[in-house]
Length: 473
Image (cartoon, rainbow, N blue to C red; front, side, top):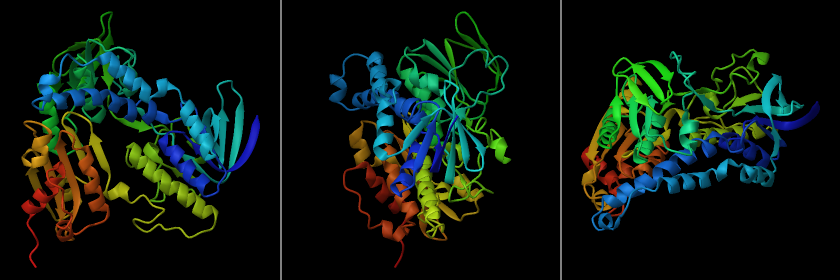
């Protein structure tokens, strides 16, 4: 057994853990990061990057076919092999050598192995060969272990060896048919990709599609998926799954679905089951509840960032939390003042008010802040402004027959926007403007002076403001 003492121990070397460690090192703290798999984490190898690489080529082909002149020049079908090869380039063929090199350049020490909390400010790391290293932290331990895909307790499902998002984003061949259990972001994005690759796709959704977004946006995605040939069974329970010689059979409360493979996309749970939480009186497998400085409730030395705290299961939001956590750990270590007021340097206020998200389906959904129903449930006095995105000049120029919609939600008591949703081709880049306006609490009457260039899709902001009405002097 090897023993070591440092200022900070970070468990998990995904983008979130890397950011927490980097901020601490930049502030002068000696930091060790622990990783049992690939440095770079889920996002780099099995989620954000490979999934978007899979979706991009079909998206570009669809866009070209939607513009006269370009459409006539498009010959042949999607080259799926080339798409998979491009995907592999983004994962570096599942090698983390580049990420390890970055850690070295940043001055962050790496210990490979499975890290478990073994006491106050103490982490025991077990390597593949069984050797152990005990690392004690002078100041803090950060849990950045992310989340794992849920496998519902459905008879036969585990024995059927279903795909999770990992298998779906790293597949080397495309099955003739794919059954997808779930109707959230992973389910809809993978349905979009695999249908574009030629697979017959059936979605089995217990409730409705994309339950966390505005209904009008979810409906447009459902309509588009069906138009692409995806079968969507909503309000349908999965009763049993069986692996057969030909593939899988999925018994549901509706029709029975036969497919070559089955993908389970039924949400995610925090990766805390084997983190050693029981040694400090916490429940293994549960979210680590944190305050706005990302410190675990009841502990002065333990922090949790990213999916593991359950606040916002998005890579960009986890990195935001990590930067705040790294900075506040360094500040506390140095005895400096902590800026923990809302929107302060050491807090993750945006988790409550301004979480942006993009669903990379066709059409895309880009949203930030609460939906209209969520805002009403919060007791806010709101006004909802809707506009046809396809009627904006920039949108109509980008694609023939462009179809889309935009919604702005205004807090009438404060005169500021608190939420926005866009659905349509290429709307992902619109969400940052909305996020900036929400975080900055820019008054609606001041937004009138943010003039969008013509003819761009961003003209939607002028149209939304016109629909809202200019404040009277």
